[in-house]
Amino acid sequence: MSQLYITLQAKGGVGKSYVSSILAQYLLEAGLPVRCIDTDTTNPTLRRYQPLRCDYLKLSEEHVINPRAFDRLVEILSAADAATPFVVDVGSNGFQPFMAYAVENDLFTVLEELGVRVVINSVIAGGPDVAETLSSTKAVLEHTRAPTLIWLNAHLGALEHRYRPIPELELFHAFEARILGWITLPKYPPATFGQDVEQMLKQRWTFDEASERLTLMPRVRVRRVKQDLWSQLDQVFSPIPATQPLAPP
Image (tube, rainbow, N blue to C red):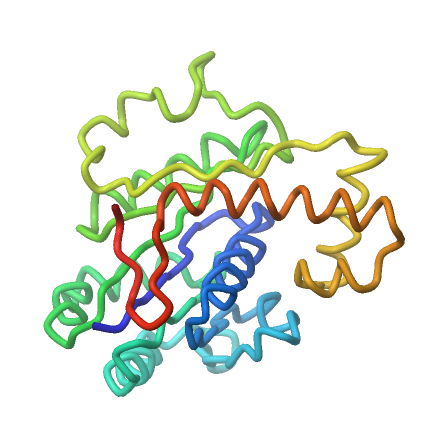
């Protein structure tokens, strides 16, 4: 059974492509033959991470998204080798068309019948974007049956809503069995870790590239960031078999 990790969030600028790149790097380090696909029609960031060798799936014609373009994604997934995990990054402007397509075509049931297991990545950002990103994650959980990995991005502010930590909100209680886990992207001290991560993101470097190109202390800090993220992912996807699709513990 092949594996699809698809990143969905209607709000732009909250770290979707960073999340997709992290997961792709994590799977590649596990020895899996990862294929990355970027579908963002306005800012295809994932494809700028050169070591990921990301393919591009064009969704729009004359700035209008054609839902039938998602048919091509299904064809690609169904034709892939069973041991191939896919990491697909959907841009914010593709969120609504994709969700409508998924519901109309009962997409995840079709993929399951084709031997494709789906995991959704949903990003919730702190601070001023918390309400909007929560709304998108709620829509994903309500309108799909796929296991969902929730990424909490503290870069823009506190990870809380109405004075309650995000994971403790009641809206997640009904979906607890389908939430694979919670991965936190912490807010780093801006003068050290924060600046190093910002440079890495601006340059679209993978963690390995950053380790090769940064000077000593920034390199040490970036490696610590990576270790923290990998440790969190290990809690969700451990152990990672080298030749089989991932499964939750």
